[in-house]
Image 1 (tube, rainbow, N blue to C red):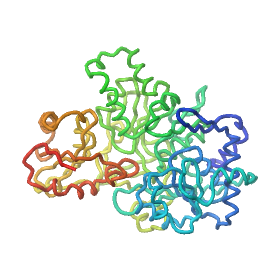
Image 2 (spheres, helix red, strand yellow):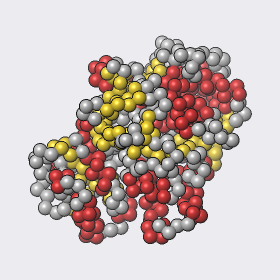
Image 3 (cartoon, rainbow, N blue to C red):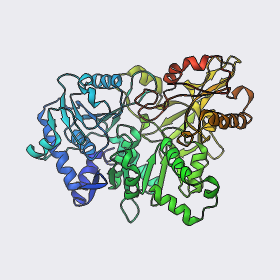
Image 4 (cartoon, rainbow, N blue to C red):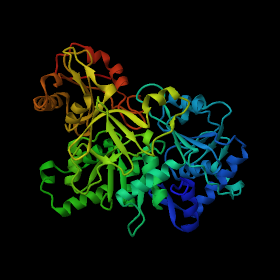
Length: 546
């Protein structure tokens, strides 16, 4: 295996030697960029490694990173590997309970702290006595700072080659229910997955270096794999984002050649254009006008454009494709390090289709239509949780918990989540994803969640979209009743939505209604609004008050 697979550290040594003067990381400040060459990144990582080694932890100790994406995050990632330890990233938007659980469960010995949402309550969250090191964005009291380490420590001179089967990182799932599970990946995982991924998309094969922008949490497998590791394995350039205030301008400035995002951002992109340009005008755009839109979005140079993490509304995906942005959907999970399925053909992607497996990936459907994966990208298991591991890893196959179907061309379509199907009093089973996809196309609706276990008919929780923000309740009710009539007639009677309940607040990570990867916390939503859901609803559209 050592001859066939290059670990992340081996790629680090390669570029440190072969591309020392080339820029690898770019950190913004008010749209001004500080650039770090491979030589500078390597020097920083080796100095931090010297500091970690001085702490004399047992080999393979866990070291946490609690920070928003930044150049220091990647430097620290390399340093942890160089020092012979295991990284444990936390989402910067992680809630207090989950943060405490992860740090205790992983037995992390040290934590690197940057900017994160709960910094104001850090002393209540972080274990007493844990060594704290501040990196970019850190504004709380720490034991040591990255700047101090870089000043006082000499670079570590070793270049160890890790065992490909040795533990590389523990990625704790965001978890829609229960405690997060620690997904274990080994040093050989990226080196097995990335070459196959890059061959599929011809990444790194052009005349110019690939450009990436990193803004989704690096603690998530998708950003870690297809941005950080993707750039590492092709010697691309990673530019970071300072935040939502600057993101649109940063994206135009970077003009990435590879861009990945979640459906929520694609919806917001489309809404921003729709708010300025009526749909009937867009329908008559010339090629030149569509090019202007692509340039304004910062996607005019992007060759590979992917959406994932949750289903993308079909009308949104089709809108981008019609605009000349070839938005392709993929399907994978933390447990297989993004070694999944993608629509990678040159033809127009059918909206909602997640395509065929990457080379080296096998999929199958069980008798009850559960999607299962087998590949070299699979986790070795859940950390300190053999029972849960045994539930999902069976005879070498990972059982995803999602249901799907394969079309005549061998393409995969995700049809729902086994645990989310519910039953009405009429004895009919409802898969919410199908209905949410249909109502996700209603421009006046933002977020949608179909529920109704034990009711005669399903109902839908929803938020106002940005386009509907200026509508009064009466005007919005009229538009939503029209949408109910139009969509309900397209589904069987038992699936028709009886009522739309507009909630008074957006569903966010901080209010506990979204996971850190922007997935619905369905059970939390239903619990929060259970009184409204179970009330004897008379109005087809109702508005809850804060």
